[in-house]
Length: 193
Image (cartoon, rainbow, N blue to C red):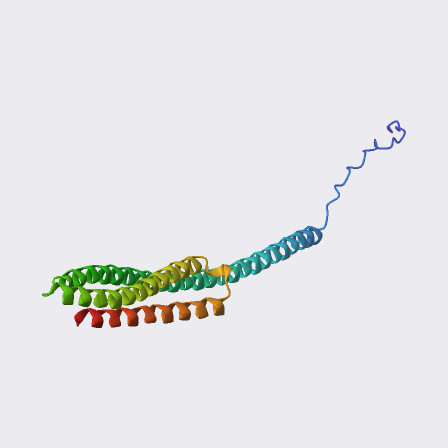
């Protein structure tokens, strides 16, 4: 007995399984390396720029600090010079006050001499000499104090004047005050007689 034959049937077709497309691993690593390299270069450029900028600011700050120290020294020098001139002015005023008081005292002393006629003549002669000397001293000391006051004004605004002119004027003031002191010395000698 034979078996009935079954016609051959083909096996049902199975749809192929779609395959996943994968990128090669080498390409992803390459892209990552390029991105990191670009970021590194950018960071280095930024760091270089910041370093250069910081260095420039440090140099600029050092220059300003040096200028500030120079100005501070100039101010200290000018203040010392102004203090010296002010002290000379005070001394000249004190000399003028002393000379005036001494003239008055000596004139009073000389007026009390013995004989009225001789005393009067001596007094008049003495008064004339003292008055002349006192006039010279008063004028000289007045000019000295006025010139010193003017010099102080110039020194307080030193930038507005030529340094050589200020130096020349300061020398002239010193010479004027020396003459006033000499006149005062002669007056004191006249008063001591």
